[in-house]
Amino acid sequence: MPTVKTRKVGNSTTVTIPQEIGVGIGEEFFVYKGIDGVIVLAPKVENPFLTDQDLHQEEVFNDVDFLATEIGE
Image 1 (cartoon, one colour):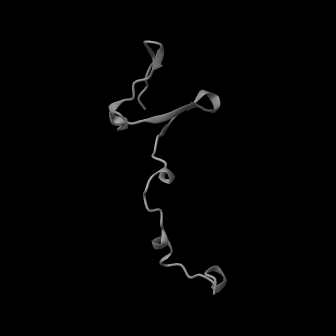
Image 2 (cartoon, rainbow, N blue to C red):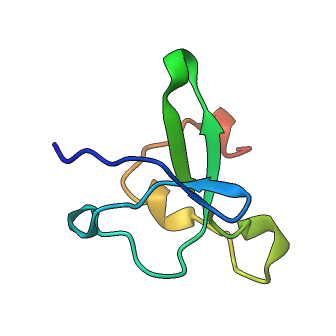
Image 3 (tube, rainbow, N blue to C red):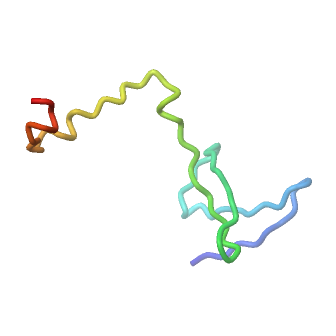
């Protein structure tokens, strides 16, 4: 497992992420400090409820047998 060291850049403390981790240039992350000082980077994803994207997921239920009471019959 590679190790990294913090360094000061301007008013910030930075950590360089090794290339073999596969993080692309310009990717955005939420960062927080967890239990026992663990630093967590969580990818920032677009909120699907703030877009015009169709959120229908009927195809997930194609192989499911519903009870009559579940589909309103």
